[in-house]
Amino acid sequence: MYNQPMLRDGALEGKVIVVTGGGTGLGKSMSKYFLELGAKVVITSRKMQVLEETAHELETTTGGKVLPIACDVRDYGAIEAMKDKTIAEFGGVHGLLNNAAGNFISPTERLSHRAIDTVVDIVLKGTYYTTLAFGKHWIEQQQKATVLSIVTTYAWTGSAFVVPSAMAKSGVLAMTRSLAVEWAKYGIRFNAIAPGPFPTKGAWDRLFPIDAFPEHLRDRFSAHGNVPLKRVGEHQELANLAAYLMSDFSSYVNGEVVTIDGGEWINGAGEFNHLNIIPNEMWDFIQAAIKQNTKTKKEE
Image (cartoon, rainbow, N blue to C red):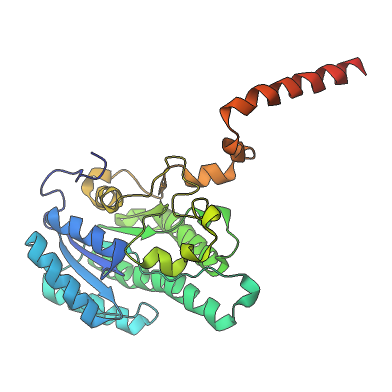
């Protein structure tokens, strides 16, 4: 049942939701579920052709209304124009899903400052630009609203080899928690989701080409290799969570980051979690050795 729709029909009826990075991947999957629940959705990215194809597909599949708008989230003027077009088309906007992102895996010393700028500008600057533009509008209109941002579990732990993304996502998380307090008086809620691996067709291979690894290492470095549940996430699972946090059912949830990763980050954080690789039959020998070492220590 985990890959089935969760909320009741019409749970987002009457809402207009803007989804950055909504033309492909997880943004597309979340947009689809928002539409199925009765929302009108604006999808944005830089590639209008992709957005138009996705909008046609989603409208055909769900019967909902999708407005595709090309928008580079690094350009505040473009965001203002996108906001104005959304309001002109739908009369208002009630939710913002900050999903646009960029990332690549690399030793940091191999990166140029421009490569770092690219990720930080999309993830951090793009998120606070979009949030600020819509937030000012909501405050001026005295309108309640919801902002949901997609972060990562390494937003609070940090992570080697994805330093630009870690820096940017940690900034988004700090913004989420800060504005959850500051703008609560305006009726604007802020929350975040930290997903584990939810691969999309081709996307995971482009980020981390597993076929380049020797065959005996592929399972360990696969998308689910560090997930205790030994599987990747289904897109519907993430869409269910996003829809709940965007809906009025979560009206008392504010300033939270919800992890949905099958236990992956906790698995990596535990000091001795790597002992999972020890076969059960070896534990008798290990425990016997521990007892012997303890006995020897006491006798000294």
